[in-house]
Image 1: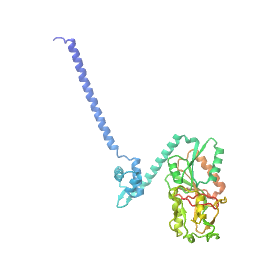
Image 2 (image 1 turned 30 degrees about the horizontal axis):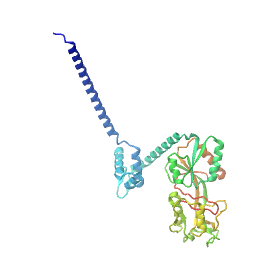
Image 3 (image 1 turned 180 degrees about the horizontal axis):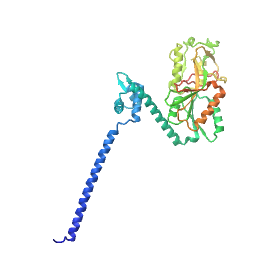
Image 4 (image 1 turned 60 degrees about the horizontal axis):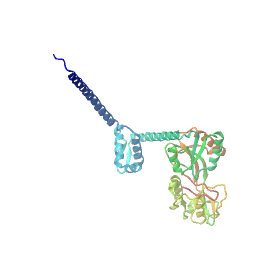
Length: 374
């Protein structure tokens, strides 16, 4: 047999290499195809797993009892909400809602699941707030939410005691309405808020810090101005005013109920920004309205009105502090301790922690300068 030439040997080597490369390439391509198929199957299989999005959609539907209102609240379409609820029920293998017209009702399983879902979402919000707080490097500072209804004497005394014991901690103030304070607490933008009866909100703790009985402001020429006490029922023909509701829905609704229960009609609305207390008292002095106000020890600069006790019980103004439940930072805990000591010096009987509840807030004014605030 003739020996192959050098040229033929080179050709055979190249052929062997090409065949080997083809087999390797085919095998690798096959493995890649299989891997892609597996990944697609896993993706399809896991696409319906429980997510926070499903919980938010379910909680919105459960609280609104209506798919359309839930969609508007979530800023999405109604079919999208329905689809996510179906995915959730399919994943859990249980019916959570009874779809009736026009309302949606919860099944027994849905009611139990709602409690758990609300807790999970609140924990997720708190976790995010803690992360943002840590990222801000807030370990040596505390941010206080304040508003026109804040108890300034309490803030001043608490701050003084706290600074004496923690001089290296920076205290910052953030001017916010009561509703904005609740949102800022959930977002981790403030550590504690000073306000009046905060709006009901999951995951927040409220501590009442003060309580005062409200008085009615009347023009000095009013027929009841010489009385020591006045019944609101005797004033039903008088116009009255409330701040715009968006400043404090809880306070607005509370005071509106007080007036309505006494037989009053609709209030005289004051639009625009929150007016100063003296504006309302000026309206009282001019005989335009009457108002429920908070008395104060200072003498009034505005003349032309008097303050009288009401015979109706339960018309009170309360101040409070609010903070995130279970997310007490290393600066908030000692700050709360000093705040409670200040309260104990004032009146130990007024101290106490209560659950979060609807906001009822009023604007603090000097004596003879008071006004109801919504």
